[in-house]
Length: 461
Image 1: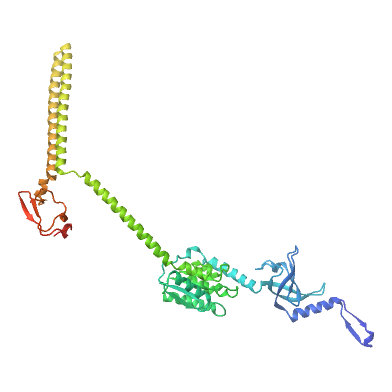
Image 2 (image 1 turned 120 degrees about the horizontal axis):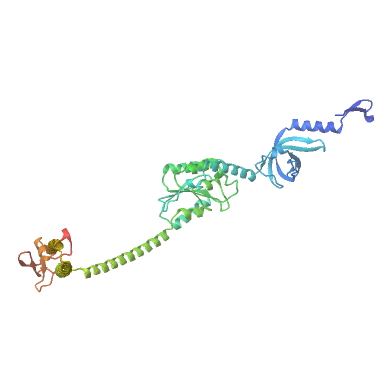
């Protein structure tokens, strides 16, 4: 610093202290830094410069004034918002002066978006935090009930949203009760009020689904639904929740935490309520399809019964068929025996011829013994085969006898017929005072009908 003294003629003979430019700027800088120090300044960025050094230089301005700003690389690298021309920001720093040009400036060490920009930053910060904790995970999303016994609404009782929701619910399914849990939806204390309403709905447990929302507004108007306390209350709710905050373009933290997000309050009412008219149409369609299915089933059963009736063979006919089969088997057995004897006789003739040709006595005796042995085996085999056939025939005969009408009558059953000989199979063909004949295992008798019923089993008279 250069300092000198000089005589100033207009002031007479006194000596005056004269400042150099450097001394003056240094004194002004010290005065600014010590007098104002560090503070927050709100303004709009303009003339933004990003030199290769990584430092930022820009101007903060409002409607009537501006101030130069410098932000060095070690401070600008960790910014949560990206500085752009036209962005309203809150700048924190030291009020100072740049001696080389004598410019009044702010040395910025922190920069945040102002107004909605600051709210947007807070939104992103809370969103990242809750996402890291898993509050947005799809695994926590619960399905909504198909037909709730009651629908709860957490909103302002005087807003348009509650009227829109109730109007839609009344149109779609007026039989479902609607319970409003009144709350503030914006302003101071709104977040606490919303949390209290959600907790009240869960404590009462009187509804199966909960709509939480309000109508449209600015980001600041909707901010209560971006509060961490509201998000945690929605996540802790035992009742499935639907968030319906603002319009379709508005996205809040409540939308991300809730089990389902609806673009508008009216859409939320559509989602949670069943369409009663559609349900009636569906029930009628199911009834029609059920009737058609029953009709087809009965027709199929009738065809099956008819088919089985045509295939049914009486015991007498079955017995006759079995007798015929026994006769056929007996004939085949006799034919097989004759064939076997003929084959054996031919073989014996061949042996005799060979024996006659060779005429050895020992061979003859051996063959004679073999012949006797084979004859005995043949006779034994024939006797055993005939005995087995006879036993099978007897078993078949016994089975047929057991299945025949006589055996059935022996078990206490009777064959009932009309006087003209027609067998009675259906009691509804008889009338009181009709006469019927009943054949028993031993003997028969005639009876007169007192009453007839189509009942089966124990219900029969």
